[in-house]
Length: 390
Image (cartoon, rainbow, N blue to C red; front, side, top):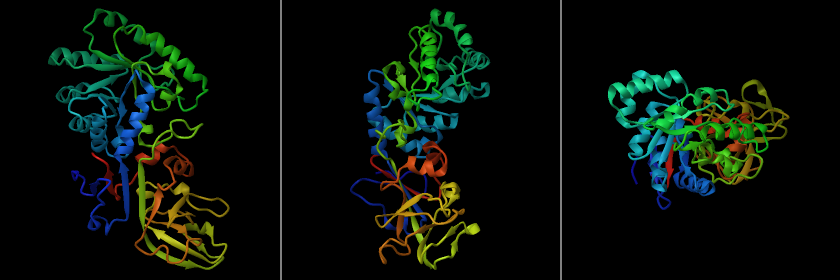
């Protein structure tokens, strides 16, 4: 197993635990199960057949590590990747030398040589951008391809359907350099949302004019809307990393991450005393509190604090679900461990913030956000352990 470039990153197989010296001083350990990511990709691939299943690895693979995740997905059979930036494309190319790599942020004329050097494909959503790309190809002799993005109702990036129609003569002439036509669903996680039907109809109409060009519409949730959303390529992102793509039903995805942080101190608090900034949590009985080494600087949102009258997020402590007590601070948070048997947890032990039944989506609910933001906010102070073959 290779030890990767991040000095705080180690790898392990299922048979080998990390070196204890690596963990002795760390405030937290984030374990990322690469085999679970590969299994999630396989699940999505099987659901999308006969469409190709690509993978979105932008934002450092949703906080899970772009090089490690990309390399593992290549081994699983993935041949097409989507990133947001050119720098991400460079990292993906190093991990996937033969893959097709699309850059969602598009093309800028001063970046042409960088695109050509790594054979990355810009996702173009503006006629002026397309003109700049054409100029670069003509003057440089580069024969690389690009995707065309069409706005079917998201009103973010993409050509209007009318602008896309203007490209049809170019497509019909051949030798157009367009390797994919795509759009993006705005409400795919809501199965009955009327925007889904409008978008798929609009996309099908324009994509049918791009004769011979593969088409792509479905994101993670879009895969579960039915085969008429799949077209030629599906583009799952968050579902690969354990976020539920079907929030109206149980998640079909495997959990990917486990986050444990260290107990720094255990203290007794008499009934009626408060804990943390602002005194927003009051002990309703003589209580025991565990102070642990994570806070909002580590991506654990302040919104999940334990407040009088409102149950905040929970942690797993010695096999028991325990509520947070008081306001989360920058580097620390407090957990009410009164119901944990004495001696079951001590200073230096680890408690689980994500994992052991506490999922990313549950935590997102307490954070007041979505699982995507939980993943991409994971702190850099944790030691990262990659489980499975990277």
